[in-house]
Length: 229
Figure 1: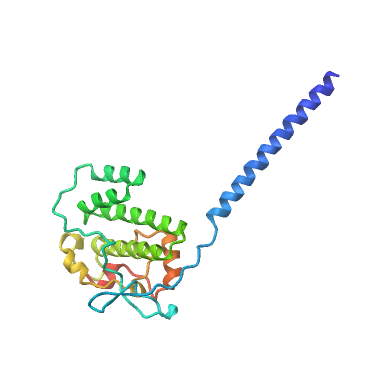
Figure 2: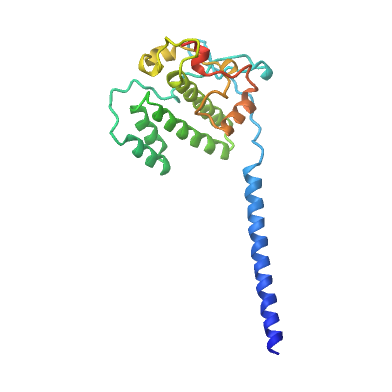
């Protein structure tokens, strides 16, 4: 009788262990599928027309069949002409605001620290959070808006902070030390000519989204290399 009870208890324990192992495996499989699910299809963007008749948008590759434009110079990209000096712990404050979901306040604080590279990095994280939310809501217009803004921040970070090309040793080490906002605004940063692989603030998902939306660019160079600065 004692042996029977022991065997019964052991079988019950094995059954419980098998149950929990299968449930854990099922959860892991579900998480893997969610993490590797394909990106949702994106419709080609329509270029917006300004009051002056000029068209704005990310410059598209020939593959897309849509007329080329330029990286948008809209209010979605922060200015670095602020005369307000950032607080000494601005980065910690910005990170806290961002983690709490206060993206507008985090963006406003990061603007005060421009053109520091850390400020541009924070803005990329903020815009990526907005982009993620737009995709969750399947809002195609907002997805294009935040992806365009993220691309511009990444391209400008490359222009301002990347090292000069090897064949230009006499060039300034950082364009952020010598360039003002008006000069940067006057430049076109075409996606088709710059691409995305050399823009350090873009992540893997950002690059996949850009190619899904705008096609594969002709080449990949840093923004500073393309501008010959």
